[in-house]
Structures are given as structure tokens and as C-alpha cells.
Length: 264
Image 1 (cartoon, rainbow, N blue to C red):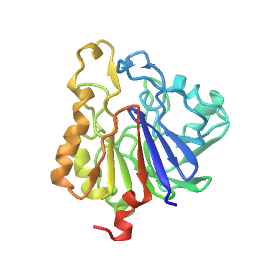
Image 2 (image 1 turned 180 degrees about the vertical axis):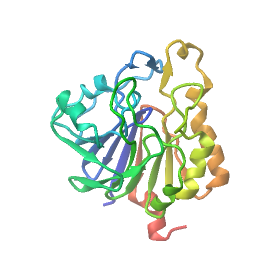
Image 3 (image 1 turned 45 degrees about the horizontal axis):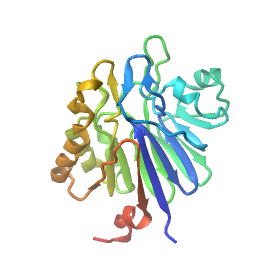
């Protein structure tokens, strides 16, 4: 019987990854607003989550590290995060915290989590700690790269030939992107370095500043389709799957491991 990995794109950089009996939640944004200045897209609800085995935190920016969202999760849940976060997390009741540096690994049952470099600032404004930003490679039946939040960087090539799936940020939460983010075109360029079998665009379509949601701005919906457009030219061998916020995609071993089986 072939194993099936399921990914639910909750929105922004929040995904529920279910693989080999392990449930992982990334950068949880689970409420209607973030930090008092960002709103969730109208009509986009979050269903209550069953227990998860671990939460992966990429960095401490408010659209990735939201304390009200974390409070919706059982305090005994394992938190995997960059170095420098343990004191903050324990202050809010999370006793099981594993801090990782780039290249370090930990295990959640049968799944191995490896921290990877990310080209993105990690400070928490206005007075929070400044920490490095991480991505993660999640290894089990499949190998999944969760980029978190990053710009394109040459070291992505070091992950090539080992990835079944890449979860790549293609935008942000407003009409413009700051330093340390990938546009749809740069995310497509990243595919030439990463060489995954399948790629799913994330970090789009969910959050917008107060006062912008009523006119349905293009930055909520256009980025993943632009990413797919550029990918068809720059990385035609990569299968692009656009998963709408709130939807689930099942990926079978046969689909994601084509490269390893030598299938054409």
C-alpha cells in the first residue's frame, strides 16, 4: 500500500502537513487578524485543528509568529524554532521547545526535521529579539522543503536532487514586497536551483492590511498564477500545484517520487 502525504494550506505560511502518521503545523496564523493591522481575507475561515505533533516556526515576524494563534494549540505540543526563541515560548507556557541552527536536525517520531538557511530578517518589531530566520526540510516517505519566508539565494542548489516537494513563498500580505521576499518570478527561478518534483506556492491570498480587503486587490489572487506562468518557462519539469487557502491536496508516493523511480 502506497503512503499518502496530505497538505492543507490554511493560508499565508500556515500549512498542516500529514506524513507517516505525523501532523506538523507551520507558522500558525489561525485567527481573523494579526497584530491589529492585518485581516484574514473575507470568507476564508479556519476550521478547528485536531492535535498536532509539532509546530515549526520559521521566524518571529508577526505574520509568522502570532501568539494568539499559538494559544489555540495545546501547550504540551512540541515547538521547533530558531535559536533565541525558547525564553519567549516558555514565558507563554510552551514547555517543549527545540531550538535549531542551520544544518541541525531533530526528529518527530519517524519524521526528521532539518533547519535550513533563509535569506530573511528575523527580528520581532518593535522590541523583540533578533533571531535568524529558518526554512526546514521535512524528511519521511517524502522530502518536503518548507521555505518559510526567504529571498532567492545560491545555497538553494544544495537541496537539489533530494526534494519531492517545495513549498515556496511567492508574495506577502500587501501591495509591495520588502527586502527578503521572493516575487513570483524569483520563486520560479528558485525552482531551477531546488529542482523539486512538485512545487506549491504559499504566502499569498490570505492576509491584507486594514481597509484593503473590500476591493479584492490583485495581490491576493494573482501571485500563484504568475508563479506558475514563469515556472512553465524556467522550470518546465517541475509540476506546479496551486492549492487555494483552506483546501487539501493529497500527494501519493508514486507522484512525488517519480525522479527516484526513474519514471518519465
